[in-house]
Length: 109
Figure 1 (cartoon, rainbow, N blue to C red):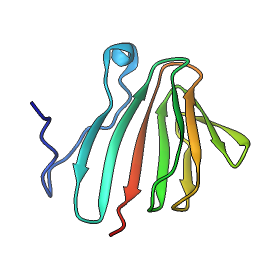
Figure 2: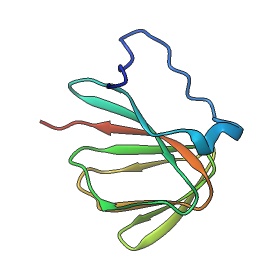
Figure 3: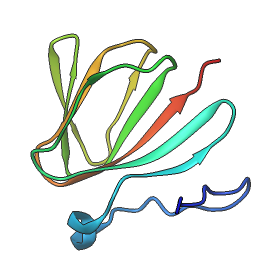
């Protein structure tokens, strides 16, 4: 059973999960022809291996701390911080503690 995406004009809560964070899962909030927004949840120590996407992306840390590696450089992303990456830029993301982030991807055709 798939989780329904939000509809145009429908509000979506993206507040921190707080104490329930360890029980949460990543979910695509919506996807259109040009844009996808994902609520990424990573438990402490979990890594998204190096990958790249065609379109530009943002990673906005909502809670916890993320270690984002881009071109061999590591940047810590804490709650309230946002990072922009051009398309085709290889990157990996590791949660240094339980973390959630809002990931926006521009979809290329």
